[in-house]
Image (tube, rainbow, N blue to C red; front, side, top):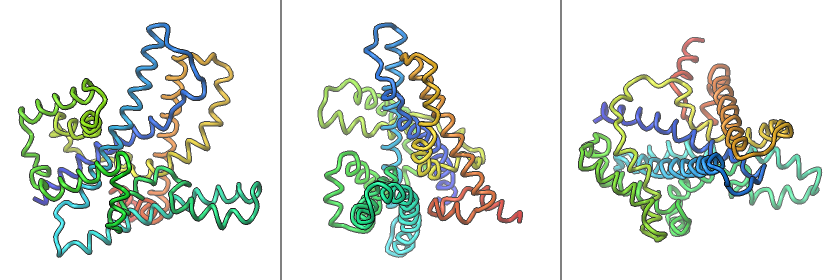
Length: 323
């Protein structure tokens, strides 16, 4: 079982890397910079379709992270390992939540000090910190922390769109179907055919609660449909840098994209340019995230481990042993 879980973990990490790129892409929304008119040509329609596809990709990525995190929380949960799981999850969720919100709070505090005065720092800022407004992408950790710590809060979480259903589903899968999912005993033609049918149904059914649930389960369909037996290679450091990219890409978008945006004064804001600019910014932000992560792994591995809640790639440990 331990060997099967190692193989499963490798697949999850690699797929998480691909899904993380989807999160960066959906946040790299350049459409609002240009406000292009309705599509009148084939090219315009194609560009708008690509933009919607990026949004769908972000939705699938979000669903994958919520389901997978809840599943791993409840996977193989017993009375004997409950405290150890609780300790590890607190480190992996609470520590990054505090660090990345604190980083955002510092920037906001400097701004408010010059514009709003002294009082707002001790009234507005603490509330915003608790609600993860300084690093909005940390709502993901916030939801899982609530699910872990406060049973009464679960009622509140379950009322939130997307969060409740996916966390509940992941927890249910972790309790009832742990062994089957880890060993992938479902990997048969019938299961793949059913996943394809459900995937199609998530698009063709009219707007309803059933269609909404089907759409939120798209990452599960993909997981069943795709053949993952080829993911046997050793993961490179940039494939395991997922959480760091997730946490820091928001700050880099706010800092770098406005600077890059000065470029589009030289081009006409057409639909084609909107899409191309989105991919250019996406590539630059992703590259910067990877480079910053690599620098921390190489020169400050402990700081990297703290910022990511202990999610340090093997390269990070190798750099320690080399010293």
